[in-house]
Image 1: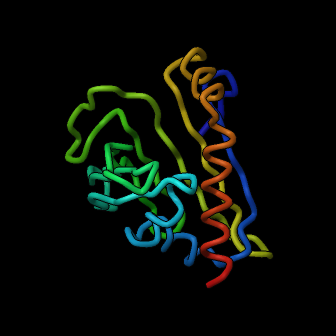
Image 2: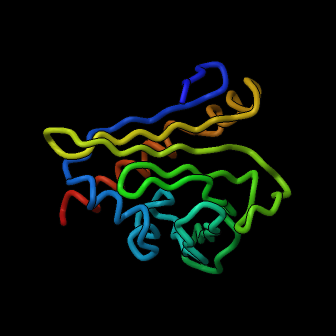
Length: 155
């Protein structure tokens, strides 16, 4: 993938856990729910069908009360243990989404201290990228990457 700074955002992190452990946290609904949304908000995974065309809808609760919609995504590509590509431009089953926004490419590479983690988020144009950055991309995606690392590094 060619990273385009004018339309794309990226978070990288060294996670001091084996790649297969990080992969499990991305593909196990119970683990995923523990880190996917910045705490103290809570996440509930409605469905996790980790295959191309599979659905990934999640819900969130910001105050510990009722859960509401968070994300409705579709997996575009899955390379076992190494890469996940998902988008909210589609829902599960390749159905067009009402409000497409981004595509995320998650890559996991072996590193001598654990896993080199990269999350690249692609947007349709510079304006959408700027809006996502202003809405707190680095804080949000950085926080969930830290939560992911905290979860898997203690295993």
